[in-house]
Length: 273
Image (tube, rainbow, N blue to C red; front, side, top):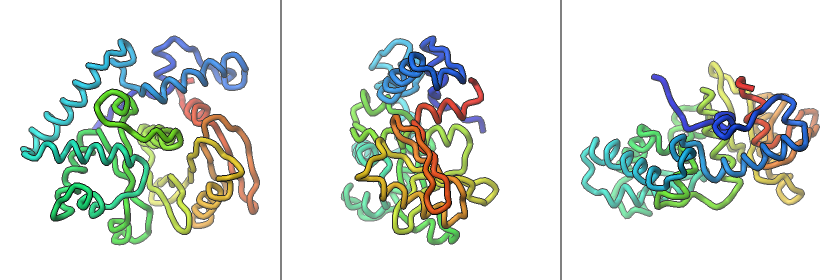
């Protein structure tokens, strides 16, 4: 199976004729151009056809085609309104934990099996994706709340449903899709606090990532503690906090925490530049 995703940030820059070199990350004028472009990328997403002509009808048609052709018609779903309501709920709770039972109650259904099936259809159509909580026990993992992510922010702006206006959650969604694009095994982890992403390679946790819009005195303890708990649990010497524009390095209890802007992380880890 060969998966195709919306444009990465590097592909977005290339489409708009913005040349990026390794040195660009540190040169003030070129960096400012990249930062402005990332702001537009966050709002407009990476759907190639939409980026070329900004035709909102294209996105609306694409969304309707996915919903009706790939889901409603394919699985012979009669309760079309229910599917649309579910999409609206998932979009508004993007990046937040949910359970099938909580969605069942919100939709007024008798059982959670229908919800689980519909979400699997949305995931199979590459509209939404579920993220499981990591646990060594498969049974506990299956019974834990899940989180939801959307394939592209373009749908949030023009397709009749709205993703959260919380910029931190939009950044988290971008990071999740990029990790999927790179083929990473991904979970979230929670103990007393949450770590947004832990990365798995050959059944071993190899990395931990926290995402927040700004790293401030107000949220410092929360963000570090969630990351540190994952680092302690999986014996990681380094952890990563991704933000909108901060760049720093911390030492916390003998461990290294790297703070990077999401845009720089996207470029630093792309082989195309």
